[in-house]
Length: 161
Image 1 (cartoon, rainbow, N blue to C red):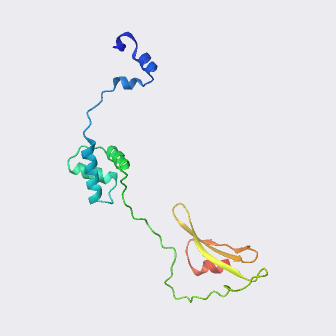
Image 2: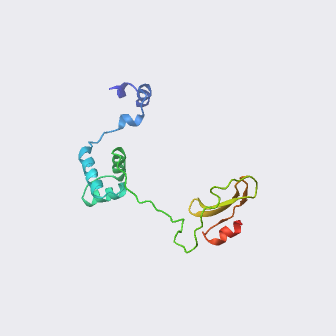
Image 3: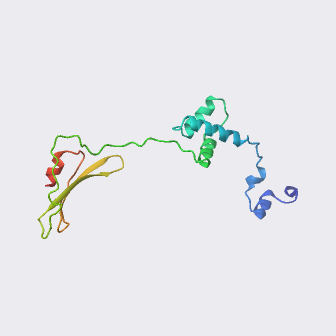
């Protein structure tokens, strides 16, 4: 062998590989087809399970499997946990306030300060929402008021005016 004539470091440098490759003893790996089929069965039975829960399920069934291996195989098989999106309610349409018709729908706007429009929206921050009320002059597109607040109430719209 070359290691008797040359140092391992020199031989690995010439071959362009790491020294650890010389010393690596490959272990016999279990057939991944069986594990893939088991992952597919668990994912079909429990569609909300991610790799952590699938690994725990295998460990309950006395499989000697690592979470990183399950994660890698699930990624290769393109199996993702189906998560429910958390939806935050930002609009409250269940109120007793009157709904007014659109009075400016067919109106020709020819001068500033003739028509103002407004809207209330929310801005998503890292962990919270901030509500923003905007009042705009339609002719000049100039913003007349833009207060923001932590709650969606009538005071926000009144402050904008």
